Length: 288
Image (tube, rainbow, N blue to C red; front, side, top):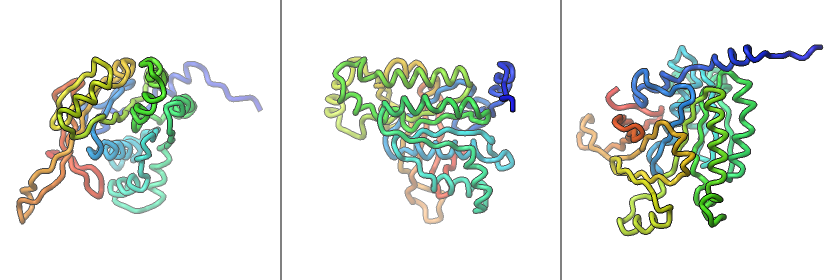
């Protein structure tokens, strides 16, 4: 039997048919201003600011059928922090589908590819190995990395030179930038906050251990520290800073009950902020 061949024109036509993510989440990205082909987006924030929960929400939006408000788009999820919870994702899917029908949930999960790695070297190899999935599947529109900075301190401890510490970062960026340009997918990656709620003195001491030109931006109650390589900084088109707050819920009959809210604020470019809560069924945006 003769081998099946695909012309360059056929390949471009197939890859060009990837589902659009413009309507991925209008509350987060604004109406008709969602991620476009080749965009790279960063979620930054301390632990407990619902970054991974947002990733699960966006994953569900992608893999759900269009009849349930989804995009029927494939997602590749690279889990470096081991925070991915498949049972949590199933709960979110069931909430959106309004059913516990296993077959319907499985149909959605067929559009999801999950890989894990535990070092920057393995991350480079893992990203390389994903090309056959991205190239062969025209439904894959979103690549998620949670988180891109997971091995930052480990790499810093194994090499004295900045170039050596950032070597695998740059290798990852080279691979990711090629995927964005060649295949037109969208990248969303989380970046850990280096410092929690520390004293001014301890923050000053920690910042001096980084490169001399650490960039700091105050957003809500979170200070964004830019510590990744210039290659990564140049790749990112949109950056969101995630924060957490405890507010008085005046909507309850008792009144005065505390509720935890989260916010995502853009600082690249600046000017847009959305607030949301996390419920058993997933994320609920406030004011929408």
